[in-house]
Image (cartoon, rainbow, N blue to C red; front, side, top):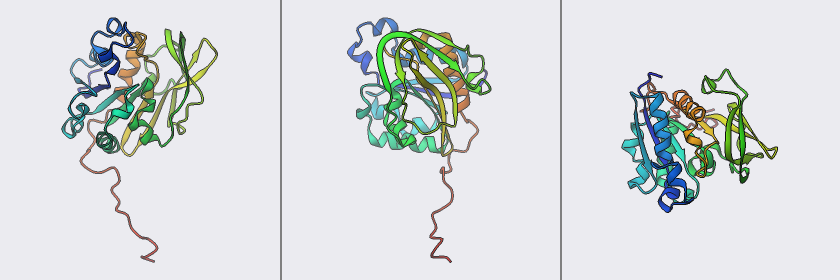
Length: 248
């Protein structure tokens, strides 16, 4: 993948800061964001790949940073409520203007995701460290290119239906678990000019982001979500509101 993109990996970083779980430092010595960024660098060696966490000034998501970002990857879990609304407003505006957004695992409850989708984004879950199989159900989609079906994840938190999201633009991956549950684990949406990809595998307790096939999915997702040639200076909606009845 020779694209030169500007990629920002955002992670709330609370698990790492609190050393919870106790082995997270062994699994992700550079944080979850560091592992994701390292995986992407193997596919995009010429790209600018940076990271940010909740504790950074403006959560690392200033206007200047977002204006220079082609794709934002978002991992959150236990601190969704600590993300400032002004930052969420800013990210939403940039997504509507054409910045790509990849929401990961428990980011399904992130303020930015629930706002953009307009639903609760709730789901069933349990964490028994069971095997997950990630099945490709739309192999023609660019995000599925070169991806094994199924991807075998030996241990993972279970996410199951009902996943309260709108009907996605594309259903690319469905996961099955040892307990019999299934989950729409890879879906896409468009909002305004922006492309959104949600991908569920990747809990803080398991080394999922070191899995080569998971890294390939994320790299494919970045390539699909990025629109580097798009003019993002124009608003997502260009037609001004008009009172058509008054003009009759």
